[in-house]
Length: 367
Image (cartoon, rainbow, N blue to C red; front, side, top):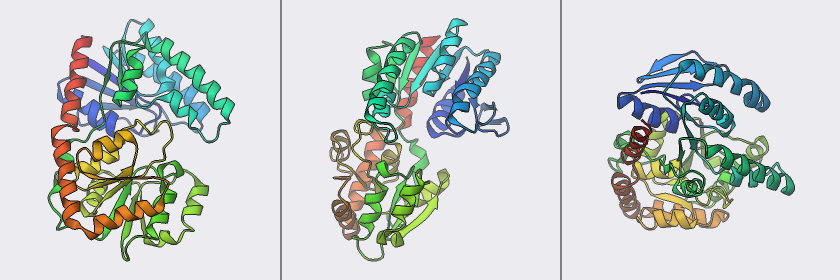
């Protein structure tokens, strides 16, 4: 099949879109293209043709000018199936349906719930925008040939809209973290956080906890700050002296940090859009064989405590975060056992090999 994935928001090497979905489809023998909007050159990489339709300078430019360019490009590619990854591209999908094409919408997040958590919108604006988008989403997604979702929770929502909905979870590729899970001889006196850095992702509480952990422990912080005011505040904390700010990391950089860490942190705040999420980094920590210190959301507790691969804590309490960190650092035998349990759970259940089968089955049915 000729397959085209399209995004106006995500980077060209996005883990879910490019490294997993596109590469899996290419390895299965399909002709795969990926249309992105990053201003870089077109290229052919790992069996996938990547086409750039130009970068944008503003959100409005992305939503109107870039969306038009995306449609013109993907129409010219004349694929059998189009797989779109951003809510703003729903209109592109509807145009493609009118041309008789098969279209999949990939719901990475529950957007109506996400809008309710936007701190820069007032209460009434959040409610209004959430309701309007939910209505539009229901109307549009009934017309698509299939819906792919990033979590079972989002799948359940879409099943009421479109019966051809399947969750394809963003679980790790087994081989990627095998070397990091080889043992504890390479461990340093460090813990890590990998991902976007922001207030609702717990950076304030994490750095405050670093004031309370055992002497000499370092936090390896892999990611970029999203809010300048939060960055200024966090860097004024005493605990910042125990942080190594690494910035954005490539895949090798992520593996190296995980290989040297005693535990990984996922301390997201209990906002509505996070409670039923399945954060990629939590499963990457498990794949690397290190215990997870995570927010005590019911779903996360079921995974982490159910597999005995970490500790769940109140994400708003730096003292409890620090207590969990100190426990891992003081008992390497316990940490190693939890890490091994996490790796075992990845090998059995939470891996991309299992999800890839669901993706390929979906495409085969669409034939």
